[in-house]
Image (cartoon, rainbow, N blue to C red; front, side, top):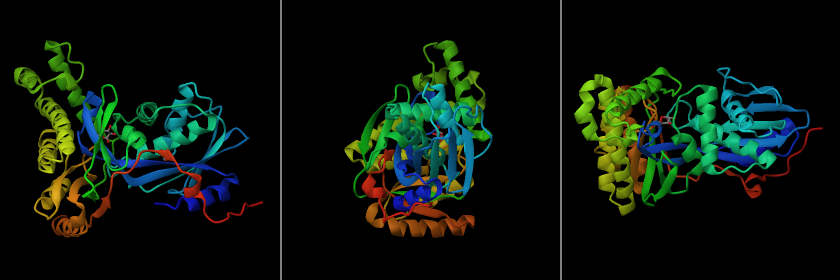
Amino acid sequence: MHDPAEFRALHLDRFLAEPDIFAAPGRVNLIGEHTDYAEGFVMPAAIDFATLAAISPRGDGKIVVYSENYGKERVFDAVNLPVEASLHWSDYPMGVVAMLARDGCEIPGFSLSLWGDVPLGSGLSSSAAVEVATALAVVSLNGARYTGAQIARLCQRAENEFVGANSGIMDQFISANGAEDHALLLDCRDLSYRLVPLPANVALVIANTMVKHAVAGGEYSCRRAEVEEACAVIARHRPEVKFLRDATVDDLANWGSEMTANALKRGRHVITENLRTVAAADALERGDMAEVGRLMAEAHWSYSHDFEASCVEADAMVELAQDLPGLLGARLTGGGFGGCTVNLVERSKAPAFAEALAGRYEGRIGIHPQIHICHASGGAHRLEAAAVAGGPVEKKT
Ligand code: GLA
């Protein structure tokens, strides 16, 4: 994590103005994949990796966005905001600003510095972290009041309507609403949720296959279209089925023959995944880790075989973890086609687990994976002055 005091100094140095600083985390999803846009259930947790956003007002009507990760700055006019994406890192923050403006929010001039350590393209929601941190920062300038759910919706719209990625609500929602040491069971239909405690002796071990994934890529949209196709076939017979959330395995038995083979498989994954996700939350609440692990394994192979959103490397990472001491459950997390696996591991055994898994993976795949031992962190928030205050910072004249 970037030292917030250093980050403040960096902003002050560049923009000669004292910033407020906000943080928004990335996430892992424990279970419930490609169910959010089918109005189903997901159970993610926020993680220790985050984006920091430092913001200060300016009087010249400009919006200046600086990315510390890219070492680049872009300048916009607050009364003439971009209306479409430019295939640039600034699309994520500016998409949020554009959505706030569409929402009727007055957008003043400001300087925004961004820095993040959520690994990019690894299925850990680096883009949602940027969006949510930006939203909190910009909203703080004009005193507008947004709930965590509204921030999540706004950022999802930025992704859908501005960036052009057809994603659901999960990533932005957990980034805005996560809670320390808890997973969050979200009903994506009405955005009601339940925080589910993670046992203190369990670590989240995130194993990066190092295979890049992109939600903006064609595979994600293609799967989404197949899920919608399965739903449309069922809806011909049962018009009350608006999303696969409303469908059952019996519907697939009855009308699956009218679907393409792919739509049938994708539908089976989503319908069974919803059941598994609710069951996993219940099992976690009872402390039944064996059942949580069993459901995670079932979810992984459903994601791999029926949804066909895994890859050789992710399947290997899950397989190679199975008999390692301390493993409670493992599966590919996030949008699929690469990225990371999430492993629930007894905390005392996590370091040895991580080392052994890295060795096995490198031995089989020939790539050294990054493995992180994390815990479930809190959702997006403003950093307290005490956390930001470093030593005295000299202003440039
Ligand atoms: C990506 C999307 C989410 C969700 C997951 C799959 O992370 O951004 O909305 O659909 O994939 O569960």
